[in-house]
Length: 341
Image (cartoon, rainbow, N blue to C red; front, top):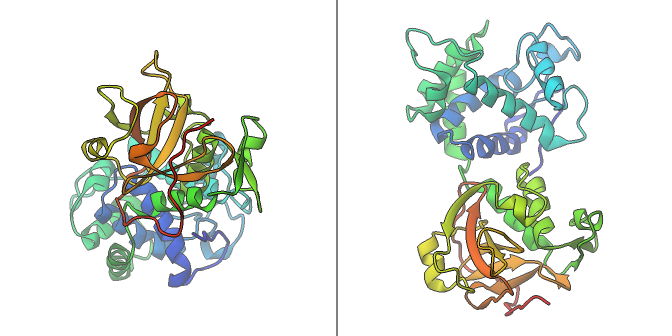
């Protein structure tokens, strides 16, 4: 996903990856597809989906509009971002942090009832907007009137934009697949290590370093822009537990895979025999009876889930992003039965 940040107007093809990233971010936080399309229709009109855009392309005009929704004055966002350490202006180095800051500001506005002023025609809260299943066109107008309150309406344009993004993006699947593909991109390329500095170098080329948890940490950080924790204990405190092993058995059998509801991109944890709520190892579930993870030696490796044995006991399955599916089997990589050393 090639995100674009600049002080320039984007064409619709250039907007697509930005729009998909925004959609994934908000969908993972409970927004409906309809509400996302409604806000995207407005963002396209306001900023061409470019978080680095200044009103009339006048860089540094703090009294004008700035960012995805053209906060006016610009200090309405920049002061908020400065207080929380998010980049803005021409500080483009951390692309995901740049996007995430503006999206987190919108989420903060929802939570704190800011910027949104309900009108008689759209008499509902910002929070209700995020959950609405009204048409994208209706929600594009609601966002325009209750949030943007622009000098130039261009209502039909906003509605058409909203319908376009409703029909032409994927909702709930893109970001987790980015994470999965990052994990798969390292198969057979990394050396196992517990060294704190080396285990952060997962994506070094041509070869990198990782252990079981740093592989997942860095894949979610790079692929989805979220932090799930740097080791298994932290990772078991993030996301949502979707299944807990009631019998505390060793192997993620086919029946367990079915009963658990595990989806592609979920993480599966093992722990010591005498501590059912602790964890010492993690694997990513790929669907179709497959794991990907780095247990020791050169890895990560693709493994058959129902025959994979770890020295600890199977504990639970956790999910950090919505939208995972169980796709056709991975091809082109041989499956091995792997017992970590």
